[in-house]
Length: 308
Ligand code: 13P
Ligand code: SF4
Image 1 (cartoon, rainbow, N blue to C red):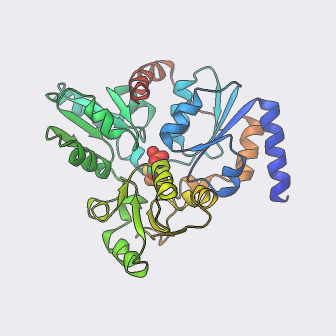
Image 2: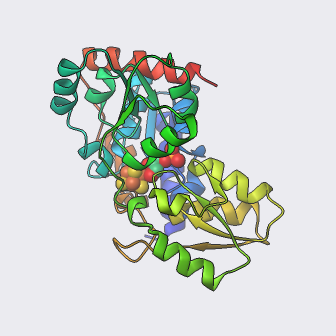
């Protein structure tokens, strides 16, 4: 079947199902083209609760779809591929977090949204890469903090906030953690005029070489608004879709990580148009979560969303 026929089929199914299609910036361009909203994880969480309809088809990774479900317990949330996971989620098993809480009940738990629903349910407040600094600053300075699970984002937030009483979990994003300073130095040599925009999941030595650090959408906005014409973008190459659309005259270079010699997230790229069509057709794979987990996870999620 031609991609255009498939796209028509998806749009028709979307109408019949009264579905909204949300896509993260790391999705393939043909999926982003069909989406009702494209965004970073914070924007998509906000979008997930501001729509009329019965079904959310979430094109991103599983933890993002879980967040949408927690905000919409009465709606159906489906994903193209159940195997679209995240190395950060795997790095923080809920039993280990519970054990930490038993040993250190005085700590406030700040959980990055890249965690399971069970871990979210154990947190005091959630954050995304966009609001992590504001979230940490919202916690009384005398209260010690455990930041889970991304080490690089945690260290970045610790540096920006100057928060000494903050422990950082040792998880990592398999994609961003291997955007090494060595690879970035190489790219800077090849493109000496280019400015560098980096995602805070990248290593501290890489971030130290960046002109701008921010979430996926913040990187796009900064590159588009900046008078510069050339940018080295230290994140997943799916952002090129929006960058080219919003600033077609500018040049963007991606660095290849040490994992795959590419700049792609293997989890995000599991989703395809065929799988999207099938999930709208069958309403499977579907996010189902225990009611008590959703209720408990909603509390720190709402606290995060209240921070502007
Ligand atoms: P954003 O919050 O920038 O969307 O990042 C999510 C993510 O998974 C980055 O790897
Ligand atoms: Fe997870 Fe990294 Fe993929 Fe983002 S890019 S979904 S943090 S593995």
